Length: 466
Image (cartoon, rainbow, N blue to C red; front, side):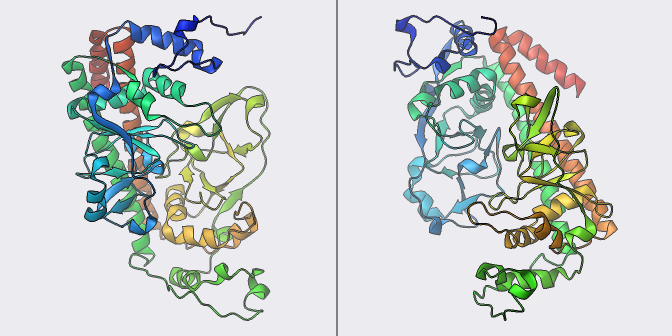
């Protein structure tokens, strides 16, 4: 019976936090019961008592109402623990927001992903904007005591909060969080002194994160300026007339989308004869893992600014069959799947000799540094060219041949050096923000498992080491 996990629960205790009977064995895993026992030794309150409301967002909002500026409209794709990332954010005008004022949020309120691949992710709304609104697949919590909000955030990101979230997710095909569960999560009562210490960590974390994003955005803007694309506006003409020799005869493609005028305008604006094959080396060999544990990077682990947010660590025989690309520090991974082409990341020393999915191409170059390659492949211009070359019926993607033949500009060495510096500084700041996140989570866990005094000492010791 070695390795068997079994627990005995009385029938009167086989209920969820909302009072429903639960028979599923997953709900009574040992780690969840141990969490319950530790929280039972603390004074706790239901999360809803700390909020003015916990509700889902605007239902069935037409994309026609999306704007390029105004009040940020938070969707599940923007909720990245512990931040909201704004690179894909759409906005609402004042009128639409006023018509949906009951779901308006402000800085330091919390948002939860209710459904989808990132179910249970939690983020705090930053001070960048004065007001926010959110979609139906997001649960928004309007926190009454804003000074306490960072503590609530880090509690939900700690193992105690995270386990409550995972435990309450419905065991259906896709899974989802119910509002009733979120409202009933148990939150420990801690002192104002401890909450103040946690907020100080968050304030530094937010500032560092903002600086990191600004540096990356600066690198991207500088690249576009160097390419003469800062104010580039391609043709919107939907009609392009080609002879058979100009279309199928040269590209092998007959689909009308491939010949949109905007693509020709973009290639002309790049003013280059170089291709990806001329400037880069694409590594697509298959690596078969054997013996031991491996780190595995997939789409979900790629951040919006070219960083890797984590990985799966698993024995070789438990890895998915798509874990067949070996990556080295300094290489760039680029998704080949349309719909996720912007999922590009720089492999740092932390992920040297990790594996990634065969859904990525692994790229490096002897004439363009990796930081510049990252910004280049994530830029809007190259993203459009990647999209153009995707093909297929069910799952459209870009083939290796199509990628190699795609035009790619050579970047001046001075431009490369500046991009290198900005991206490296951006990544260093992001690592610092991740370290601050770990400190805050650990401090919350120490306060629950032991006491606040030890947690505060831990924070102080970490501050001395910085």
